[in-house]
Length: 402
Length: 230
Ligand SMILES: Nc1ncnc2c1ncn2[C@@H]1O[C@H](COP(=O)(O)OP(=O)(O)OP(=O)(O)O)[C@@H](O)[C@H]1O
Ligand SMILES: [Mg+2]
Image (tube, rainbow over all chains, first blue to last red; front, side, top):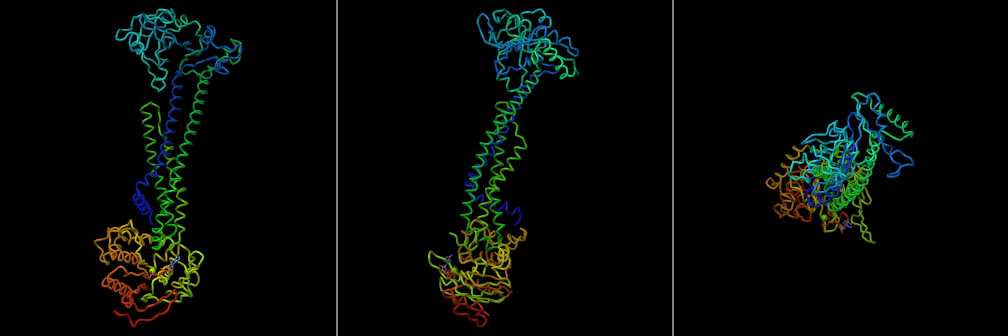
C-alpha cells in the first residue's frame, strides 16, 4: 500500500467521523496554540524590556553610577550615594573625554495660576534632547549659555502643555515648579517608540541641570555621563575613570560603570521571563498530554468499532503491518492536523497581542517546527497501542465481532 | 492442492466444549469444482474459514499447495489470502463506507497494484457482474443480489487459484442463482479450483463433486457424473 494511498484512506475515515475527529483534534490544537503563543509573547516581552534598557544607553557615552546598594534602600555605612562637583572636575581631565555632564530627575508639582499637576522633572545638559529621547516641536531647546547662567527656563511635553494651557500658545508663559517661576521656552514630544514609553511616558518638564540643582538641591547627582570623542575605547577609559574616582573619594568600589548594572538587569529579566515561559509552557504541555490521551481513547474506540472492517481487510490480504500503519497514520494525522491548526492559531494570537500592545511577540521558526514534530510524536505514541491492538486481531474473530 | 487430515475444531462455550468439526479428512485437487452441503450448524462455514486460512484447526493438519498452513507466519498467511484465495462470505462482508468499486479494488491495493490498473481491473470485474452502472454505489445502496455480485467480483480481483464461496446463491432467485453457478463453472473451466457451500441441491448439482457434512463429519462424498451442465 503506497504512502499516498494510506494518507487518502486515513483522511476518508477521519471525514466519516468528522465531528468526533475534530473534537479529538481540539485538545492538541489548544495545547499547541497556547505553547506557540506563550513562547512568542514571553520572548517578545523579554526583547521589549531588553531593548528598552538598551535604548537608554547613549552612543559615545560612559555612564558612571554609585555602586549598587546591597539591598534596595539599604546603603552600607558610609557608602557614597552621589557625586560631588570635584568628581566631575576630575573626570574632565581625562584625555578622550569630550564633555562630562549630569542629569537630575525627580517628581515635582507644576503650577499655573489655575492648575496644579504632579510631573516628572529632568535636568540635563543643553543636548538633553539627543540623549533623553525627545524632540523639540516648537520653541527652542535651552542652550549651553542657559545652563552656565542657571537660567530659569523650562520645556514641557505636548500633553502637559495641552493640560496647562489648552489651545493657548504655551511659549512665553510662566509656570511655577517647586515654587520657583520659570519661563516655558519650548514644547517637546517623546521619540521613544518602545512599548514602555506608554508606561512611564508621564508628563515631563525639562530644564538646565544647573537650574534643576538650584530648585532641588537635595536631589543629589546620582549619574555621571561622560561624552567621549568618537573612536575612544570606552571600556578602558571607563575603568580608568572609575578607579580614579574611587581613589579620589577614598573608597574602593564606590562607583561603577552603569553598563554592568544594566547587563545585570537584562540578565535578570532574561531569567525571569525564561522561568515564566517554562512554567506556563509546562502547563500548556500538560494540556497537550491530555489531548494525546484523548487521541488514544478515540483510537481505541475506533479500533473496537471497526473490528469487523479489520477482519474484512485481513481476509482480503492486509498484513498486520498494513493494519498497524493504517491506524497509526490516522492517529498521526489527527495530531498533525490539530497541531498545524494550533500553530496557525498561536501565530494569530501572537500577532493580535503584537498589534494590541506593540509587544514584539514574534513566533520563532523553531517553536513552529518543534511543536509540529512534537504533535507527530504524540500521534505516534498515542496511536501505537490502539494500532497494535488492531493489528494483533485474529482474522476470524475480527470478522465475527458484532 | 487442498489436503485436510483429521481436522477438528473445538470451541469452549462456558464450561462445555463444543466440537464443531470432528476429524475431517478431505482432499481437493487443483481444478476441481466441489459443492459442500449439509444442514445448518453442521460446520460448513467453519470448514470454509479453515480452508480460507482465516481460522486454524484445533487439531489435525491443513496442507495447501504443499505447505503446512500452521507453519506459516501471519505475513505469509496474509499473502496467501491475498494472492491464492478468493473468499465470498455468507453475509458478503463488504466495507460499508466504501463504494462497490473501492471494495473490489481493496485486494488489489494490498497486492500493491498501481492505482490506474487497479481501477481498470475493478471496473472490468464489476462490468462482468453486470454492475457497470452501480460502481459508485455504497453497499447499503445495493440489493442483496448486487451485494453478492460485488463480493464475488472482489473475490476474483487477484485471479485466485481457489475460489471459496459460502452460500453464494442464498440471497438470489433461482434463475440468478443458476447464473452465478454458470459463472463459477466457466471460472472452473479456466483452471480455478471452486468450492461452494449451498443447501440447494439444484445448485450443488452444477459441481463435479458433492461433499455432505453432518454434525462436523463428512458423511458422503460423491463424484457427480460430469456435473449436470456439462
Ligand atoms: N466462535 C464460535 N464459538 C462457539 N461456537 C461456534 C463459533 N463459531 C461457530 N460455532 C458453532 O459451530 C457450529 C457450526 O457453525 P457454522 O457457522 O460452521 O455452521 P454452518 O454449517 O455454516 O451453518 P449455516 O448453514 O447455518 O451457515 C454452530 O453450532 C455454531 O454455534
Ligand atoms: Mg454458514
